[in-house]
Structures are given as structure tokens and as C-alpha cells.
Image 1 (cartoon, rainbow, N blue to C red):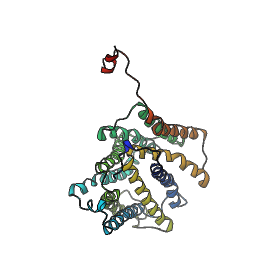
Image 2 (image 1 turned 90 degrees about the horizontal axis):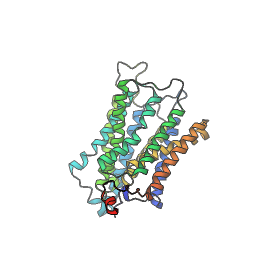
Image 3 (image 1 turned 135 degrees about the horizontal axis):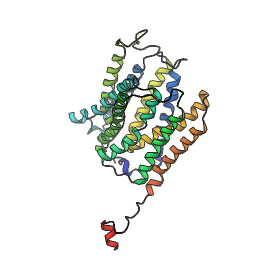
Image 4 (image 1 turned 120 degrees about the horizontal axis):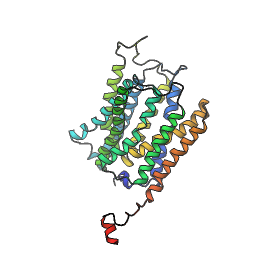
Length: 341
């Protein structure tokens, strides 16, 4: 039996909670894993694009091995989907290219703003995902769901503002235009991936992942090769093909691969909006890890942001499921109101 699309899925079944908890766990650990791979100056002694490529390659390998084992076992639910049309494969190039464009535009954006402004504006993708879900997926969102999504964005932005350094937020007009494109790519990539995956709910997720990750490997390979090409703006030693890749970097490749696979489950079963809530909720848990293991501290203002984010999650997952829209006021011309007159 095919899994149900996001709009009919109950978040509080054991299976759903397991998938969401796994995605939240890996999302929470993403920033700490990045810190573990950094040098004492906060930089990188290895080529980051090398790590991204192999993380994508490991995801593709996992999907291909799963498909091969299912084919060898002659699983009819899988075998019938191993023969797919060219259009079925080509449609997965779209999210691959969108995320490729997003990653490369980020470097351009940071030339026109500081990192604080970049992180702050990236939070607008939260509402952008909801808007695109309505426009592209014809998803119906009622007032309480919109409230929870807006609160989530406010909480995430509040958290960024609470950590604003002395240099404030600096951005120019061209930076705003580039950020608008980046936000559209970030939101559109997730919503489009959800649309493609849920269009064929009976198609096994790993078959879909195999098609998606082929394009991911191609685009990440292009980025990796471009990263070692000298540019006019580059100063100092050229970027190495691999750099100082050790055990922790290999661990990060595997970690990112598992994290990506967990997110693919979320996108197919629950959708892009749920992924957005998981990403933002992870802010709270990542902050606690920073306090416990990296000597960070949490201010009172940051604690209030956690309260806003958790309130948004509660509204979206609990209260919104039992929400009953208020009846229209009498005499507003609607059929329901006219029937009562």
C-alpha cells in the first residue's frame, strides 16, 4: 500500500514520529558536525565541495544498492518501477539545478552583504515555502496554519537578531535581488521535489532518490571541479582538490548522506512545510548542543525565540488539526449566511 500524501498524514503515529525525530536529530547535529571539521581559525583545511560531492555520491550508492537488492529479490512493487520514462528521469534535474544555483548564488550574495544579513533574509524562505505550496500544490492553509508559519519565521528571525554582532546588518540593492532569487530557489526546490515525489506515491522512494541523486552527483561534481579553477579574485594558495581530508571529514560525508536520505522521507510523506518546521525547530536543539559541548551561552532574548518557535510548532502540529473556521458573519452575502436569514 502506498504511503499517504502529507495532507492526510497523522504526525502522531509511531512511524511518523520516528521519521520526524530522525530528521530533527540529523538536522540538529548538522551545525556541530560542520564545527568539528573546521580548523582553529574557523576555516577549512579541506575542499568543502569535495565533501558535498561524496555525500551526494553516498546517497546515490545507497539508493542504487537498495534498488538492486529489491530487483534481485524480484519484488514486484519495485521491479515495475525500475523501467521509467525519460521525462520521469529528467524532471529530477530541476531540483538538482535549483539547489546548484542556490549554492553558487550564495557566494555572490555574500559579496553584497555580511553573513548576519544573509542568515536573517534566508528565513523568509519559511513563508515562501507556504506560499508556493498553495500556488504549486494547491494546498489549503487555514488561518491558524498561516499564523503558525508566520510565528515560525518571526522566531527564526528573532534568533538571528539576538546574535547580531557589532557590525550590524549590511546589504545593498543588488544583494537584495540575489537574495530574492536564492529564497525562491530554496523554497521552490523543496516544493517541486515534493510535487514530483508525491505525484507517484506508489513509486518507491529509493527509486525516486536514485533518479534525484544522479543529478545531485552531476551538479556537485561540476561545483567541485570549478572550485579548484583559479580566479582573478583568488588570493593565496590555490584551492586543493581534496585538502586535509581525514576521519572527521569522511564521517561528515556519511552524516550528510544519512541526513539527506532522512529529508527525502520527510518531503515525500509530509511535505516541504513540515521540513521547514523541522529545520527551524532544530535551532533550539543545536543551541543546547553548543552550550553543552562548545562553551556557548544562551541569553534571555534567545530563550524567548525558542518559546516562539515551539509555540509555532505546537500551533501547526496540534491546534491546527482541530481548527474549525469561524462561520461567516450574517448578511455577508454568502450562501451559508443567506440560509440562516
